[in-house]
Every structure is written in structure tokens, then in C-alpha cells.
Image (tube, rainbow, N blue to C red; front, top):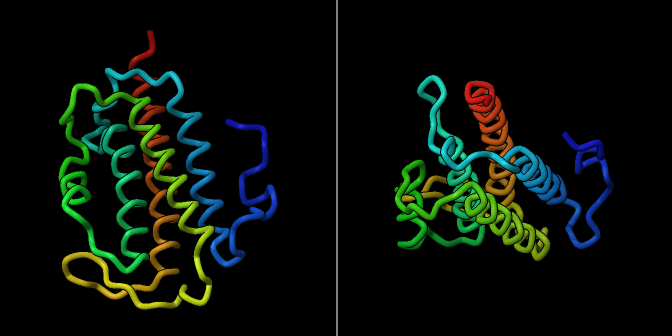
Amino acid sequence: MSSKPEVWLRGPLSDMPALVQPVAHALLQAREEINELMFNFRNDLLWEKVAGMASPGFHLQHLTGVINRLFTYAQGQQLNRDQLIALAAEGKLTDDDITVTSLVNQFNKQVDDALNQLSNTDVNDLSAYREVGRGKLPSTVIGLYVHSAEHTMRHVGQLLVTVKVLLNQHRH
């Protein structure tokens, strides 16, 4: 792993409101860890499961999708057709062009989009009520942002374990 301190210990981000810095730090940390972990990971292992748990491909798709969906809700919007299709496709090989690189690149782009949204956040809106999902469950902008950070890091941990086990099982 990296010899640099974790992102949150590198100081404040100059273009980020202080109240959303922890979310930005978590997303940046996740990006660093995923890019390092998945570097040179084999495409043929992307959809393998360990002990019936989710595959690396699922985790990469889900990480991207969850950030996208939660940040959509934070904007006060509901999911569009494309987002619902992407949600239904998570964990399924629907396109032979899906590679480790393409999934990591999609995740990186989603983190960039999220950071842009966070940097433009009006901190006076953080407690604004938001509805989540078809059930229109109650949340707030800050609740959605914080959940995106913690959910992302949870899946990064699961991805790390899955990848390490797969690499150990398939050593050549």
C-alpha cells in the first residue's frame, strides 16, 4: 500500500467546503486504494466469487452506481431510466467489453463527478430534506453524502479481501 498518509491526514482540500471534506477525503481514499488494488488484476478473475460472496466486478459496478445514485438523491432528483438499468445490471456480465480497466475508469470518473458536486455544495443546504428511492424514504443532503462515503469504504474493504483471496487462489 501507499507510503503516503491517508488522504484525511494530508490536510484540507482547498476547493472543498469544510463540512463535506470528510466525504471528499473518503472518496479520494477509496479511489487511491481501488486503483492500487486493481492495478494488473486479471480480467478473467473479475466475475469470480469467493465463498459465494460478490465478485470484484460487482463491487466495482456497485461502488460507481451507489455514489451516482446517492448524489442524484442529494440533488433532490429521483433516478432516471439509465440509472435504473445500470442498477439492474450490477454484478452481471452484460457486455464482453467490460474489463478491470473500464470499471476502474468508470469509478474514477464517478468520484470526480462527486467531488465536483461536493465542491459546489451550499453548506446551508446540507440539512435539506431529500427523498430516497421509490419508497421516498426520508434523508438529508448530508445524510446522503455521509452514507455514500461509509458505503463506499465498506465495499472497498470487501473488494480488498475478495481480490486478495482470488489472487492467492490463482497464483501461477
